[in-house]
Length: 281
Image 1 (cartoon, rainbow, N blue to C red):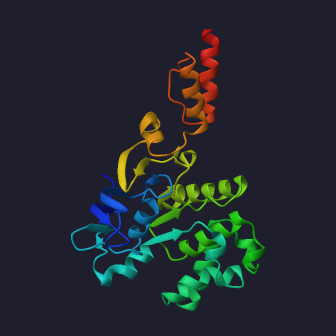
Image 2 (image 1 turned 180 degrees about the horizontal axis):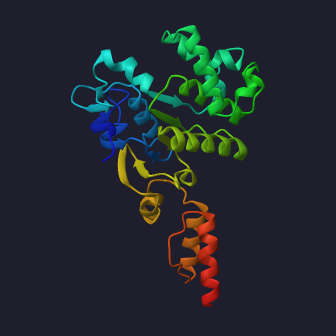
Image 3 (image 1 turned 120 degrees about the horizontal axis):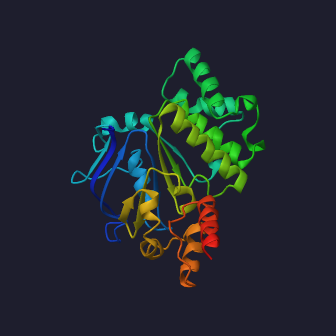
């Protein structure tokens, strides 16, 4: 049985004491080596939830947020949690803090006191893992958006986390940059066993997940495999999300009286099902 890396029980949260709940009685378990997508429209609470996962927000004592068994309520655990959970944010420009790629990756290592010799080795290793070793002396602002996000991922990898959170990390990128980042993280999951939590409003990104959690108004409405989730079209639409292209086509075909035999998660699935339908007619 896979090890539980993150466990959340009964998490509720308000930014203002007199305001509405942003999170309401959230329960969540994430296991080692999984690719988890947490999806929801703007204001659904998904990014707030992400901040609890690496102790940027701290629960009250009546809630439980455990990261590899470490209770984030305990102040002594906060820095250890943040070393184990790395976060890539939405805007790559806001993550660049140095004048060269090398110094940018070194920034986090300097903050936790890694010795210089080990720091050099970690920087070289991390940049190689994201295929950016040729850009060591480049100025970050001269890189593309996708390259900047890969540098941000390298800075996290150098810290040797067990979990990476992508908080809308591809939403400001063009299609090529988006593909670069997602392929890089998929490779890290496959080869290094890193657990990935992708916070997104784009269901296309959730197709290859192990588990998908759908959030709306601070609650997790449904969760399960992508194949199960994408069959719950009413729940998806009710959560303010757009169906992936393949499912939208399938829905439109059904309204015209054409029923495909299987739910199509990808465009390739859709093409195959359309061929089967064509052969029957």
